[in-house]
Image (tube, rainbow, N blue to C red; front, side, top):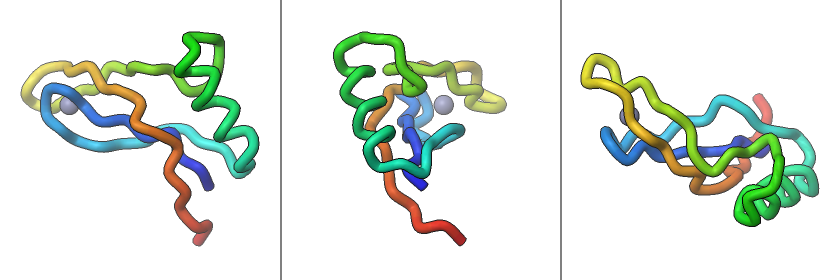
Length: 68
Ligand SMILES: [Zn+2]
């Protein structure tokens, strides 16, 4: 699975909540995101840094994790 991975600017946490099993789709989504085009992978997301507020998280890539 290629997980679209984000890093929060406020708390520093790295997280993922979407992805794709297709390497080609993951690469396409990351490329389209950098070009500011419509894609599954947005360049930024809001992160709930519980209990310390809400941060802005940046897309840092599509990280491959083997299926379990
Ligand atoms: Zn955060």
